[in-house]
Length: 189
Length: 207
Figure 1 (tube, rainbow over the protein chains, first blue to last red):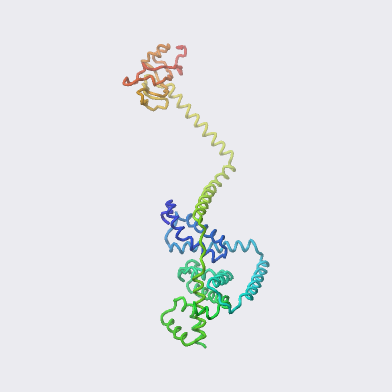
Figure 2: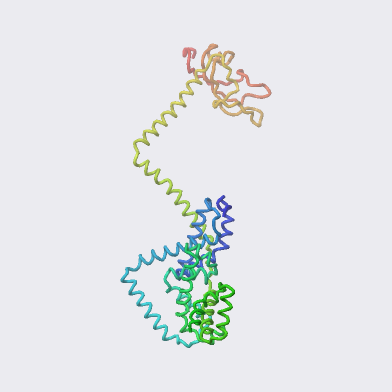
């Protein structure tokens, strides 16, 4: 990063190559939109590049990048929400979403054995329906594999709060996917 | 039942390995003897496993190229953005700017012609031989001669050619000559001047 600050574009290329996948995927988990995820990742790297000259190593570099990406996701999601939906429209949309899930519930029998890939899709949908304050720590810790400490640093939250939010998020995801997984599947995992 | 509740509160930490040794052993003992909690544990573990193994998307192949385009465009825009307050100030203070520019132009012209005036009149007896119009020394050309037009300014006390033009020693003249006719190794000499003589001061009747 220091070399980037001195104008070394090759050094920045290296950084981008190393972290692109992580930034795109964390943004994808947060937004559920592939194009938006790439856009957020690009903006993350642009912000990092712009700060390169004044960059001081006060935290792990990846933690810093994740912080930028998470903040951008938060801003982008809020911006989109405000742009497209009034409060009334949002309520209607939530209602529609729950109806849609109910219909899907009928086609997907609760005792049906769900393949691993399909389970992934279910979990993605479950994550998508989590409130932001549960979604963020869950994605960072359980999907991206960061430590509780790093997750707390990124979200600027005490570790205790992070753990409690993650456990509540896990519980909600588990409850959402439980109807789709039977004991034989669980036993086999 | 109470023990089941306390164990279930610890299940997630048990699954992700963040429990202290003692608590972990306690949960493990309970799970070995409680089918309901063991089933909860398997579900929790399956959920965590699925979360950690979600399919990852691949960034587009031209991600880096697009990023550099974005950086270059934004940086260019930022550079322009920095100029905007200056441009706004210029618009707001147009008369000041125009007056300043005019003053600068007049000063520039004044300096230019003022200097020429000083040079043109020169000091009597000053030998300016070998100096070009810019004041730079004559430069030898590869073919042995000298190339370039030079203006000699000064008083040609020993300038026979000038005398041929009817100038008197002591007259102030400006002489333009082709130095390509000056042939080394003979050093520069006023004898070699091919003059186009114009009086710049002194007695105009000499012509």
